[in-house]
Image (cartoon, rainbow, N blue to C red; front, side):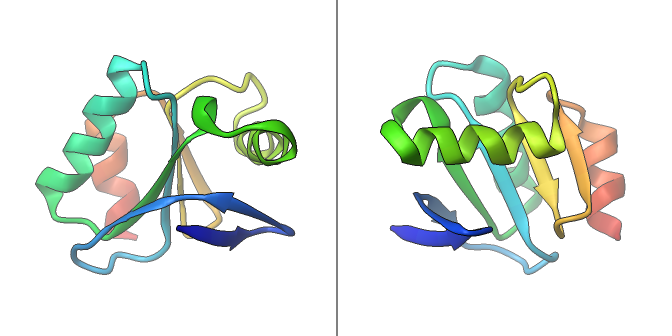
Length: 102
């Protein structure tokens, strides 16, 4: 599925769940911590979008990395963005729980 994020389109997948705001996970398909973060969000029953940045190509990947670096200047993964105001870098359960409480 293509969605608009910022000023660009990018392939994202959606996981249905409880609406807890806009939740976007930037991940790598080969990253264990990314997989754990995605599974943790599923376990919490959260509605969220995610994209595997390493599977994007060309401008789409460049745009996604620019977005990741806006929230996480080191450009590391996973990068979780909640309501376009909070970012959590890495697999940090308690920080994720707190941020989702809003």
